[in-house]
Image (cartoon, rainbow, N blue to C red; front, side, top):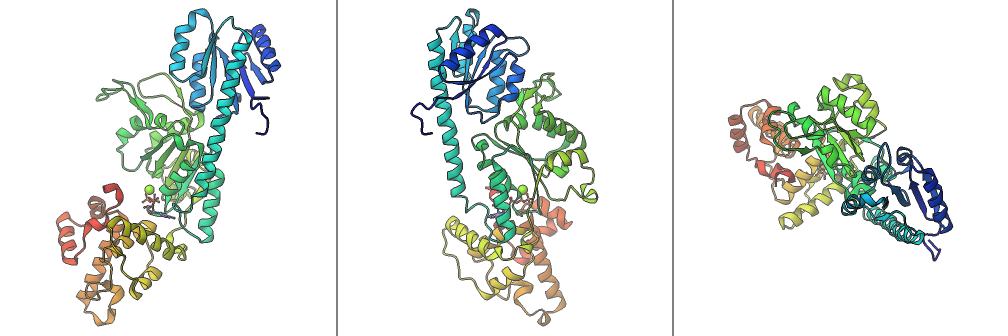
Length: 458
Ligand SMILES: Nc1ncnc2c1ncn2[C@@H]1O[C@H](COP(=O)(O)OP(=O)(O)OP(=O)(O)O)[C@@H](O)[C@H]1O
Ligand SMILES: [Mg+2]
């Protein structure tokens, strides 16, 4: 902005159902140098207001359809910081004061002196300009220090980062697919933190772990008494994510009935909590993650095709680690450093065995498995003691059959633990063995479960 009068030409959206007043106020503001778009219908005005509108909204309170307060509330959902000035009649002052407490910028009582309105709009426009400028600066700053969270120099990863940067600050819904541990959640959180939504909540919901009976009230919220056991009113995750990002993990496991409702939410951008007839607008951005290719009918299973297409505006596919091997040493170096800091240990030198392992292993647990490997390495649990170090270090042909079977078993157990972040229940389920057998084997192979535990476990 080079002008010394920053609000010169600043935009004002003006709403009043009284057309005479509308025309008069428009004229007043235009004379003061503002660029005014006038609406006699709040509904139409709403349509033309977007989250990054670079101006000020001035609205009358008393109007049919939706009144000025309701309009104010809906605008806040679109953009928390968008200044709204309310024009009130005599009877509405208490209401207007409450609105100020709720975040409205100012209220002006009718009849008003024109310069009172001009001054208020002038200050609001200046504040708006600063807010938008700060947002832009913050985005630039975030992009500048991006290097760390999504590491990788293979073309696939560079492309992924480029796309992320392009779409992060748009409101487009995104589907992220990739194998377990490949970085879907990292991608989702970058989409959030590189967007204007970063100051809103990043709300994650794993559709695969919640029981079907709970998922709807979690997502949509409920009124007290909406169903047995609903003692208190509860804001759903969708509403909680308004203005931020809703991360729906393992979307392929979403129950069929919830899919129908989710489709509606995505289309209407509004939510109705269980037990209420009311609908509430939400400023929604959904990032969904799936381990399977939902575009493939064979893998999609019971997942609704229409919901898939609705989510599939942009799909980001993260390749498995084995398809971007050159990234392995880079990631490993990074994770070693992190683990060394966390465990306050000097990392041991990387032996030939470890190098070979890094190069040849298939990483079914992808980057997560590599983070665990790096941690065990730093703790000295993965070094080359041929006696305890598995198929890879010993010459297989020198071993007896029981020894080979033993090594194979230990390797399978490590892989399963790594894949499930050391989660005992999931590992046992995957290995299909009784709990006691599992613990016996851990002990026999000298495997320390805790070293596989993800940070979630604390
Ligand atoms: N490119 C990357 N750079 C740095 N760290 C990464 C990268 N990809 C993944 N990670 C790390 O690997 C671990 C697993 O990543 P993440 O949780 O995002 O995987 P996911 O795809 O969501 O897995 P799941 O399907 O099992 O939930 C995390 O600790 C994450 O920080
Ligand atoms: Mg995940």
